[in-house]
Length: 244
Image (cartoon, rainbow, N blue to C red; front, side, top):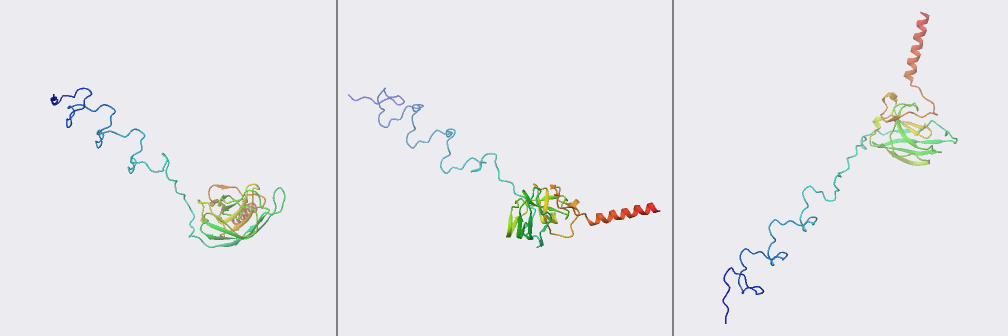
């Protein structure tokens, strides 16, 4: 005997499939854990699981700089005081002031110094043998080797014998406008071994650049001529007062 069709809205008997074309009872959700039917979109508002990478082609969240670790930024620009295109060409002899090391040993220095651009000077025919330890180029505004001076190049000066040309670069905070006299100074010997007077006449040592160190001994000081003249005038005046 044929079976009567199920009443609309009535669930089929347990274990029996619904008749073909019969919709499931209204208000009933599919069993938990079951994937939606093919072609069915997921429920609205569903976010991806925490830690899940965005889908291919999706842009990262606003504010995230690709490849930049959190808290880091671009390196600050390096301030350079000298300008390679602004300089006055100068070539002067390198004059030796000290001929021996404190512990013994003769020192020979020779060469000429040329300003080759606004940030570089070159020593041509350079001889420095035996070289004193920890020798660097310093700048001062006096030919007195005991005047205050400041480091003008971070490149150490080693031992050279008839070097055709050796170039040195100024430190970023120095320009040739800051000093008149180039000093070959050894901190181990506390002495200036040679000088190159780039501009004459030298200024007063009181106008020397900052971050300076005291001059080295051993080479003997050269007193400023104006200072000697003032001392002599003062002596003459004292003699005049006594005789008066």
